[in-house]
Length: 427
Image (cartoon, rainbow, N blue to C red):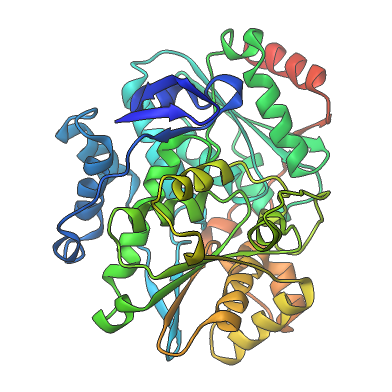
């Protein structure tokens, strides 16, 4: 698999090289030079999830990982389901929260951890990543206890739910967590600065587990195939997928799946009030505003890192821009959508509710809509209970950490402070 840095065409990498580097030169994203087209999609959709995923990833990766390696990675990573649950006659949700940390990022986090553990040959690695919620938990769980790999997770202090935070700040061991006095974009900026600092990048053998890492992105392609495999043939012919979007890795994976031949008619990029992309798709002007805090905090991103990858897919002809629409959903409509879903017998958290609202608002006659459920409602228990006015029980994974103390340290949004902390803690 050949990948190219979207900021520097001279900077190329194999899949294994890109997984270990994380970011390319000039903080550029690695992306495939070519997306393969699958000729046997109907047959693939008849296979079990893991078996199909091995074939999808084999088409993307070529012969970089031998058959036994890829098979063992996938079998170890994808150990949970991704069911499609009908909500209305022509609308269903893809539940991506049945993994160990109850969020869609378990797929990418576990695939990356298994891949890195196999290709690093025991060399020391430091994973540095920023989270607006679910990434932190998924990455921490996936890498916890893996020899020779330290993980540093930055998150915006006071801006993610308490239960989200507890899932990754209570582990300890090789998992180090930092509450940054700033927003998620400030956390991302610190990560990017660290990758430009040779003292940290080379001294600590730096890597990142954000959706900027190509391994996480490719893993997510697989559950789009799983979703379509569960739909009746008639629904596949007119499928519209609504993706709750923050950093835009999830949508990027869906577009790759479509480019490979998966029957998806069009996509909706559903955002909260951090609506840089919906405004851009309407006006053609890229004009990020200051990040706004919302109840869908995992999507509180005003400068999404993965957007250059989507631009590359459009520019290379893998996606007609007309088949991608952006929809901004404000706080009031988010709550309305949560209540509408509850009336239909389905309990949802704010991120999925935004995707549902955008989908139901835009779905045309004859189309079938699928919106992505990216996190278990209990991860946003307080918000869900306040909006719906009814108690919500905690699943086991959350109940076990609810009473534990956070081990996170608090730092200002200062790279000098972060560098000092990392050198003192990890060097």
